[in-house]
Length: 94
Image 1 (cartoon, rainbow, N blue to C red):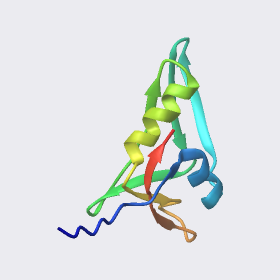
Image 2: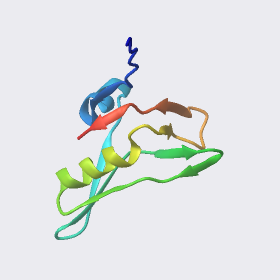
Image 3: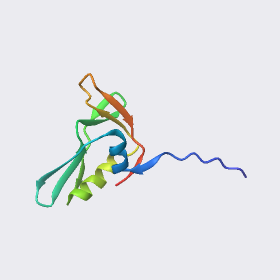
């Protein structure tokens, strides 16, 4: 049997951020509780914009969780401004 395989693009979250000149923000809520997200970003679900965050016990876990949250979504940057940009996020690894 012949099989044609069509795989989705994959990259690390660092490669994705570098490619699109994105800045990761990492915030400490309190010791042992962090959240991460790209600056001025939302994800688009249908016609709705939703803020996405990654949570973790340290910065690295928060970034990894964020990568899982936005992987395969449509990322919207600067949604309410003239320089709005939409980027299809590939499958991400932290």
